[in-house]
Length: 258
Image 1: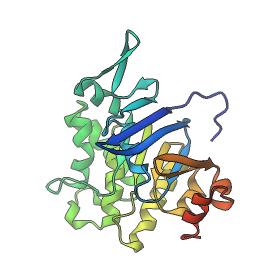
Image 2: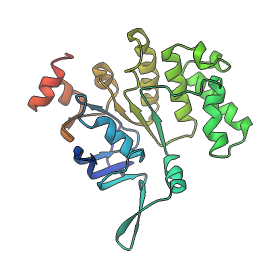
Image 3: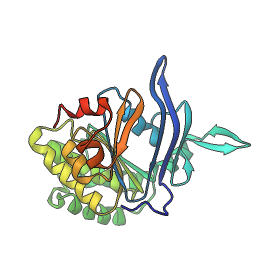
């Protein structure tokens, strides 16, 4: 990924988020460029997942700004003041952003194919025929072409998560967010999900990935961000942050994995 002469797809400035008296994000600044894969590492409670949820306005920020593809997420600027957008307007903004969670959250009464076409047909008004055709393409892309008619209970955890990735891709997002996508999986199933994510990275999809999978960060990331205590402590290439961390907190965290 070469960010030269590109405008950032994601631009976060001085992002603050608190829950009552707990300050979770304390001034996050980050640009993510088109085609870039940014992996966010850090201990539990560092604010990684909260930051991800703020990017698509699942959590409203208290201060600062987050822009995605030129849109101020969750707000609009009017007379030099930020106004909250309606839920419908926020839903339109979210069409640019796909998200994959720790839990797969598939509808148990729907087949894999039906889960994937639910948003394109039910929310975005796409024809069922074209949505199904694209859903089959996506199932092939995640290696589950033969599972179109299977229900979630008939799939392994790794297969369910790959269906969840296909479902997030079905809206043709410009940005994909992954929140610990392998943490709920048995260890032997982690590899198949990471392989799918590597394929997406190689195809040039812009991705922000919160994970503890250091091997994935080393192989697939353009940049690695290390967060601790609501701050970005260190940021750079995988070789810089993982191979030669400078900050004591980064060194301490990585020593448990390397």
